[in-house]
Amino acid sequence: MGEGGVATAWPKKTREFVSRHMDSRIWERFVFRDDDVIVASYAKSGTTWVQQIVGQLIHAASAEAPINLISPWLDYRLTPPEALARLEAQSHRRLVKTHLPLDALRFSPKARYLYVARDGRDVLMSLHHHHSEGNALWYRMLNDDPDLGPPMTPPDPDVRRYFNAWLENDGAPFWPYFDNVASWWAARDLPNVKLVHFNALKADLEGELRGIADFLGADLPEDQLPAILEHCSFGYMKAHAELVAPLGGRIFENGAGTFLHEGANGRWRAVLTEADSAAYEARARAELGDECAQWLATGLLKGASRG
Image (cartoon, rainbow, N blue to C red; front, top):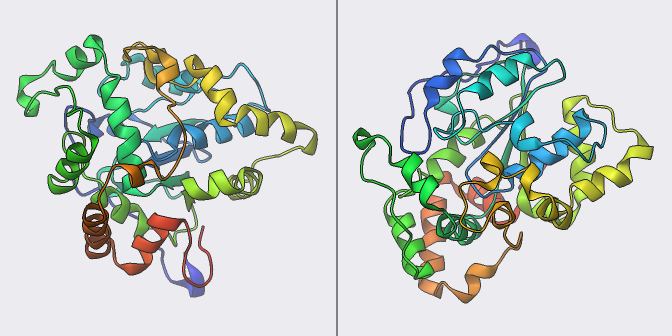
């Protein structure tokens, strides 16, 4: 029940999402536990950063926790089939990653959901790098099924053209961006959903870490805090990228270290024109509304903060 005895309207799955990148049907085989943690996002929004934070809370600041194995991207078509069995065998609190929009995901009222977001212009700068680093194995695995639409091909080297094509073609060659954000934004007031923003992580990692721990009801011993903060720093994660990169980095031309690029915002300012940026901002407001568009661009919410 929600406030005032009113029944909570929990999200319902209303569609399947099957593409070259994802297959939502795997969640039909996933059996939830009450303390599961789901980290959701659009790609390149800070997902791995939040996975690392939660993994450090679960595994007591361990420097050896391989997040890419412990916390698989469950609905990624390239994730090995045995990942589900590994999750079922885990006796500790489980942590699962998804890039699905909420209406394509089975939802548990008992699990905890962290939705991570980042300005789409920053997302695209990182996504172009990610796409540019894909190797022959990545393309072969993504293109293994001819019925999933046009094949994945190398990116346009012109980043501005790449951005505008992504904006104009609803997230192609990946998946829709605004649809993803809007679906999770609509659930922001649910008691088991917390919004996390890339900007906030960069501005105050310790504060965000404490907020996530409180939301999850997770222990955060003060004597472990320095180690957790170190292990969640960009430099540390990049230096140990083989523990966090999907498939251990095997799908990237230059290995796991390229999965984490610069971790910087604002690089789009040197690439996009004022008109490009204005078009993106207008699209964000039209698709998401003013409040969500402001939060997406800045990490700030009007009035009282949520989640």
